[in-house]
Length: 243
Length: 75
View 1 (cartoon, rainbow over the protein chains, first blue to last red):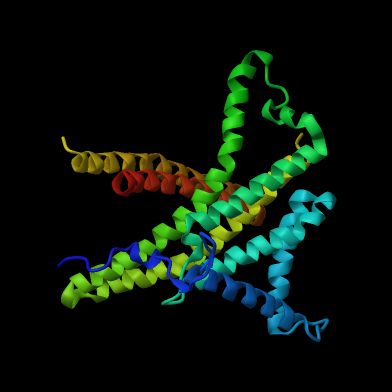
View 2 (cartoon, rainbow over the protein chains, first blue to last red):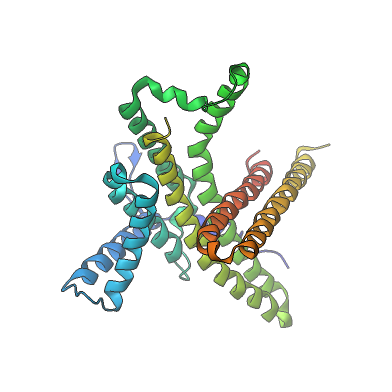
C-alpha cells in the first residue's frame, strides 16, 4: 500500500495572513501562530498564578513557582551572583522552548521547534551573546580560553585549532540537537501511524507503539528544552568565569 | 552506479555511526547505576548529570540521522 503522505508533510509552513514588505515575505504563518500561542500561555500562566499570591501557594501558583525555582536554581548554581542578570533571558528561553515543544504534541497543532530556522536563530543568539559577554568581560584575554591551563606548550599548535573548531561548533550542535530531535520524533509518530493504516486488522499494534512513543516524547521534549537551556547557562559560565 | 543507488548506499553507511552512540549511552547508564550502587546518597546529584550526558550523546545519534537525511533528500 503506497504511503499517501510523506512523514515530513506535517512540517510544511502555511501562510495564514499573507503580508509582504516590499520583496520580503513577512506573512503570519502557522509557525508564528504557535509561537504567539506559546507566549500568551506563558504570560497568562505567570500573571494569573501570581494574582493574589498567597504564602501557601494554590495549584496554579505552585506550577509557576515550580518553573521559576527550577530555572532560578539552574542559573544560580552555575552562574553565581554575577549571572543573576541573565536569569530573565534563560527563563524566557527555557519556558519558550518547553511550552513550544510540548504544545506540538497536541493533535493538529504545529511544531515550530522542528524548524531549523527557529532553533538556529536561538542558538546563534545564544552564541553571540556568550561571545560578546566574554569579550566585554575579558577583552583579548578571552583567547586564553583556547589553551586550557596546564597543557604543555608543545601541544599548543594541535590543541588550539581543535578548541577553536569545537567552540565554533557550539551554535551548530545546539541548533541541530533540538531540531533533529523534534523532527525525528514527530516523523516517527507519523510513520507508525502510517503502519497502522497499512496493517489492516492488526492496526492496534502500531497504535499501541505510537501511544508508548507519545508518552516517551513528553519526557524527551521536556528534556531537550532543559538541555538547550542548561547548555546556554554552561556556555555563559565559560564566558564569565573560566577565562 | 547511478546517483539514486549511491544515495541509498550512503544513507545506509551513515547509520553505522549509531553503533558508537549505542556504546556511549550504555556506558553512561552503566556507570550511573554502578555509581548509585556505590553511594546511594549521591543519587540526586549524579542523576541530573547522567541525564544531561545521555541527551548530549543522543544528539550524536541524531547528527548521524541528519547526515543520512542530507544524503537522501538534499543531494
